[in-house]
Image (cartoon, rainbow, N blue to C red; front, side, top):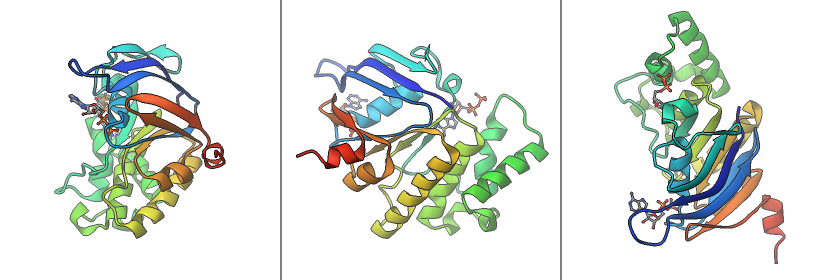
Length: 228
Ligand code: ADP
Ligand code: ADP
């Protein structure tokens, strides 16, 4: 579990105006925060800087009060859930979820792996699908497998990059409530990027609104809703 602090974060690509401009946000341990705004406002860039896939031009990024600007992604212990799931088509659901454990530097016994995967599958209601391949799953089930991977890594925080944008409207609604319930059950700090107003207003504890790289406002969905 982790708090994440963004302090005057700037990202400058080339000579243009900054993709992210002086953004400061304090994300509390266990908080579910939404980054929302139109395409090109800097949401993905901000998320990628937090996870360590993108260098930070200026400012400080702190995880549990420790500055991590120069730490490699693997040292940050954050789990990213992508919109295209990034599942391995030739592996079963079980092996897809187990993958980060097999990759980890710290060796896990087969028994340990079986236990962690089984437990994650139970949380995600995937128990009956563990021997299937991704091609034989629905979009929502694939999304859950991708989350299972994040769960078994016991990451300090989940970072979601528009995880529902490829799903149809019905499934999106269903997954929205599943993600919200699961985040509350696990109590894990989550940062969730979307351009979807409904997701922004229903999922998070707080919503950070970005425009042209700048933080316009940050408030609870209720406070945003009640604004004139
Ligand atoms: P969003 O996720 O909100 O759609 P992005 O973070 O992807 O926005 O992009 C923010 C701005 O940074 C945009 O103007 C985009 O064109 C620019 N940008 C993103 N990635 C790169 C890159 N690798 N090189 C140059 N400019 C980039
Ligand atoms: P190790 O224990 O060897 O560092 P990890 O479980 O951290 O192994 O995974 C290896 C690498 O893959 C790390 O750099 C980690 O950050 C990255 N990684 C694995 N899964 C994810 C994910 N879902 N999101 C972000 N990074 C990931």
